[in-house]
Length: 396
Image (cartoon, rainbow, N blue to C red; front, side, top):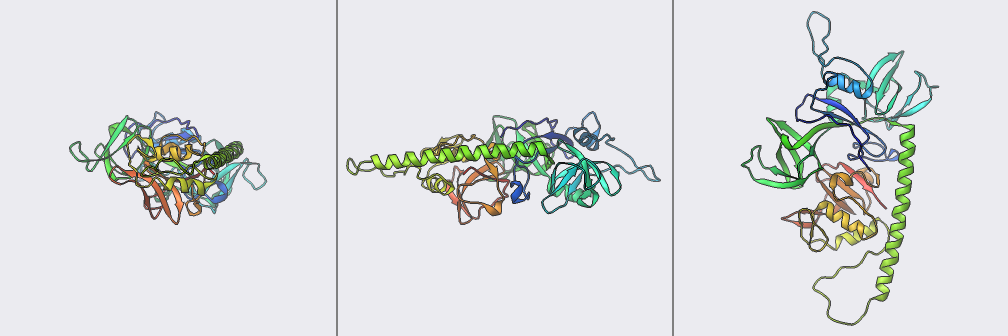
């Protein structure tokens, strides 16, 4: 899915600005599976970056994205001046799944969209026991009991701090200096989970472990779930249906092709090579998992896409699915927006499991197969949540 975001974030610091986006780079389960992770095609996202906008501070920039006007350093008019926290203007939905956003302050108001659990909005005003809110491209009313307003700890816990790589090949180092060991490299456009920020350096999570990158080469922001309008939901469901249909057709072609290959193979001839690989057989997630597993032991090559001679994590996933007639991007962050989202607790063989700066294929039994590192090559890892799972995406 394409990412169309308006982003102001340019440096890494904790003072935040808010930008509205319609990305699906950070994903979570589809509506019927709950919304326990982060962003999916069924939501937009709010990115809290680090540059203070002309509207003034976090309160101002949340307001600019979501429709509220305020000062960044708003001071309470009492005996002692109190500067508002950057989280004071963020309200977080606390519901079982989602709450409807209505056109008026009452149950008879038209449903304009949905605000999902742990998603963010700003409160524009009150009307009785209802809040007027703005979130994503939705503005309307929600009963106050479903929102937690000004809870900094909750807002921090549901937001995800990320670093977008903006250089061709980013070195991730063992310590916050240019003399330390390089743990691994990350290509431009990848999105990494932030662990810590200090003195011009950002600690991020990659497959090789946690390491440091210079803030000069990344854009830092905080992602929140925001509301989904009725129109956006309808468009998403239509797109997912089309993707399922295309995947089913690709699987049918792959199954037909593998059947012809078996029928035309010769029982005689020269000796087989030292290692042979079966063509794709079948057209479902289990077939994808079975096909991927036969490449375990082959090398990891940064930027590579060869299942036999070497691939990196996203190149491995891309090439496995290409054998089934499915075109996927060569980017772990972009793979977090393909297909449709499922809850990590509902993973099935063939699902694409996305981590910070990494991706693999679920094969069942709480195990993934993935092109891990140069030291280990393509291998199995269990449990599948050995690292924090950012998203799970299903193609078949």
